[in-house]
Length: 109
Image (cartoon, rainbow, N blue to C red):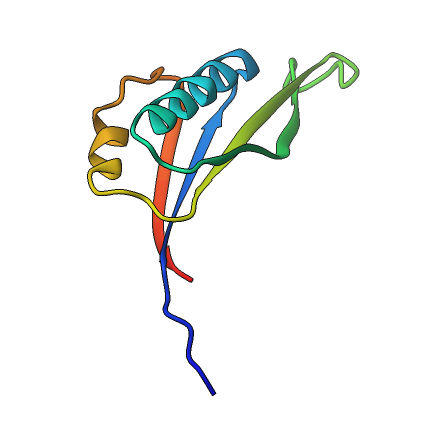
């Protein structure tokens, strides 16, 4: 039996409450990766997470008086099969919007 050599894979996840901001950041990251000569798969849209909650305006009476809120979290995934050296540094130096959170993970596959 032959054993396959494991390769490094970089997974990059962007999350934001604003769809416009996450799309803008995703396009910027894709452009950065293409310039640096990496193969990029993505942005892959992940399912949106939605939180719904209701607040009663009056604590004692008037139960029908309520405020309903909805928070939607959008996320995108980038998959970089064989990242070149300095990609993580490029990601961390890269200037992206403050409303977009970024998490990355290097995995052996």
